[in-house]
Image (cartoon, rainbow, N blue to C red; front, side):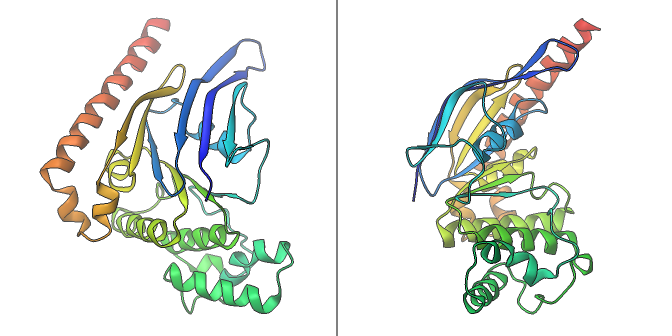
Length: 268
């Protein structure tokens, strides 16, 4: 397992008609292998930009990102991405979607089938391998997306609002699945969310990011992800400790949003 190191990362977007926007400024952190980091903050704070830099989809304007001491200079199989919408191949069935990575890596057909069957069992989709993607609910499609990501055996799983499009009940079930996968696989996970409750429940480490320019405002080490593996999530989320931390974060985010609105109002 490999540690992730982000050092002095900045990102400036040049605008087509001149000028620029600084999305990130001097972001630095070290993330030990096997941690589950959640990124929380108001819109425009650079959460997705940071995720895309770690994925290798974007090159930072300054600073560096390394995984296990090796610089990240582009996309790589050791980093897997799960998007808000599953980004699945509609013309392939469930099993074919999950098998895509192993097929591209020319793994033996028997090995690939065994891997796919095992992953479908892990994400609770045993018996659905021959189903078309359009036959599945949103939550089931995200399970397929998780299985497809795991099939590439990445060191780090990156998730950009993976549960944002789901209804409340399905979302809570999927949160439990993410915790289960995190514990069983030992993977490093970085998850972007706009939900304070979700960030608290899933992250054993949490960064609150502030906008303009995007930066880490505050870092938390949290117990709730570990506790959530063996405790009813509704009881955990109703606990005094959870509620106290949730209100602290809500106040922080709300204050940032008010500053953004005030700044925009002053510019109009």
